[in-house]
Image (cartoon, rainbow, N blue to C red; front, side, top):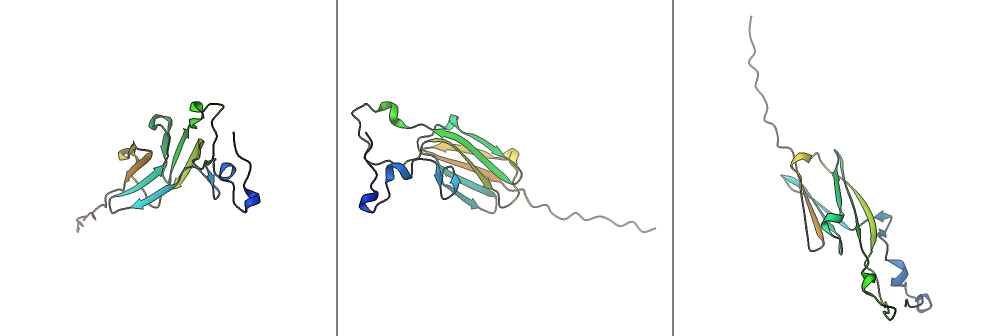
Length: 136
């Protein structure tokens, strides 16, 4: 049983306003993006997801994460009353622009406790090449 909207109390109903992955125009889970001297690091909060249910695509200028989180409703019975629900469930996709070039072939991803961390190494700086000038 889902309770009626709370609009009459001057409140936003958490049962109908925040269950989808759509927030502020974005589709997908919240993302942190960091850049160090050696790498670009992306952290994605995906509560309830299974690591195997996500795919990661790394392009030249962006990273795309796709996946799905399943609602725990399978464990609920007819007598279950949901009083509050803000955790989003369902399919998601998130496209994250990269601030600098990365070496895609050496990228790594790890998923633990609902947090996906992607490490994208930056190319190493090339040292200048000295060319001998032949004088004829």
